[in-house]
Length: 292
Image (cartoon, rainbow, N blue to C red; front, side, top):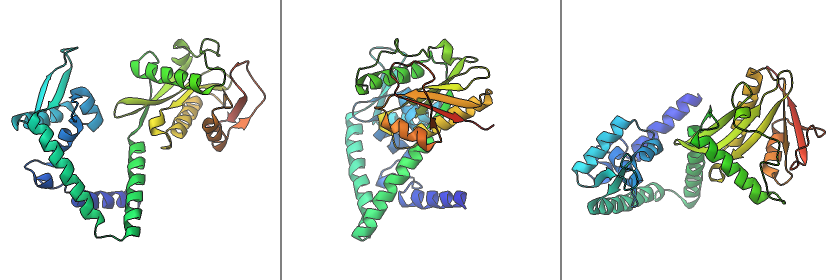
């Protein structure tokens, strides 16, 4: 029933927005080309970033870009700073075409809202916002990652920076209980990184100890996607990894200013425990038994 509901929704949406039309919004191009034109934007875009953002394979994106170049709307050129990087930019005609597409997109949206009552419009807009958020959440990918990779280091640095802003006394990770790269690499431990359109948006780590509870460390989610359940998903994935590596329980410590994290831990069944380490920044210690 759930799968059929999703398929029914997809059919209605693709027809209503004109995704099936070869001439989207009355222009001489299909939706795919127009979406690329819009995503390039007035500032231009790295082709690799464009591919990741739209989740297209390189061959298909190259064909779309060649079509737009042939129409005189886009030019693709090497980056000034690094000639190995290709940048897609709109031509003057491309900028004008994008502005026209924006205007016609507004007209399409208005045509969806006008036939409805004020109450129906409010319901539709609210439902669309919720669907957008949930679909975004479904696009987040979580994987075990080498903590030395750039995406992992970005998350860890963002985590340290946020703790520094939020803790009453600031945060110096060299004073905290260690969770270095070697400790977050199997078999000593692991790091999970969440990505959205190939961009890092969250992380969580485990330190593993034979016959002892695993330690949960470095839980962070980008403010841009908070509220989408990514923190809960990371936590559940970490628990599964802990079970898979033989842990019967998981422990963590946290600071009293991290009220959202504390609420998440309690909601996920973590129980407050006596202090089990000397973490200088901790006010709360939690533990949870795990079932295989």
